[in-house]
Image (cartoon, rainbow, N blue to C red):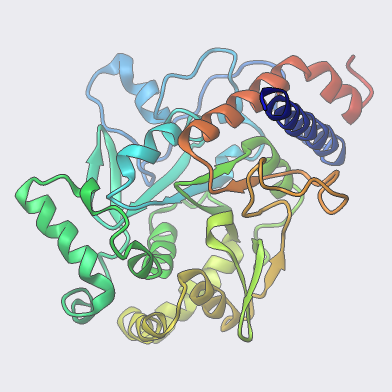
Length: 355
């Protein structure tokens, strides 16, 4: 049995290496700078830790200490992307820390949304449901867990004990309010809003290369395509991407209707829908933004569950879903080590100028 498990592991690892090689070749025009650069401070509109110690300012703005050889924070396009992570209060201490020491090391702009306003160390966690009408939060059955979370927080109880209690019903209500708040809080430099979940693993390098070939002024909505009834939508767990051009269309529509009237209409729609990611698609279709299918770059599989067939060969993987915190960390370290060791190969594939 041990030999068989090792064979599966080696095959998966070889497959990842092959996918990375293909990614590097296909996106060879764009790559990380080859020399270290000084980290750029995050803008004040994003969730940056507060610190009064001058020597800790740089680390606080970057959300972790950045080793000198890591220049992902200043990679081409990094300053134009906001990562928006959606999670739940009952799982935040289990899943958030790994993201803070991996992906968020490289992000100048990010927000974290949950179903409870919290502070994790110096990190602000926004309540995605804050703007939902009291008539739903106070009485609707989907908000039973939300009301329990509020009670547990007031009483100082361990909210992790509520994990699994109707979290799915509550989760669907987070999507649209989270999008509105992300747009409101984002600095004007942000061109791309990338939404992921706490059990999503994201390749920062592949993401930047992918987005670097597109125009954020165009109304773009990218994700792994799913269908419910007449609606084709991006699966939330696989991650989805919205350009500033698309986000602006929704916000212009909301402003024109009046925020409360707009929100009331979509809250009613959400109450009747199974899924928040499906509601997002309909809100975008209303402003003439259709999904641009982006599977298998954005997908709901893990390295272990993916069928490694011709459907996936030479397609750069940007996201994986249903991954554990240890898998997020392992995949992050594997990617970074591979990139670091193969800089000369990367440039050879890309320009044939540096060997």
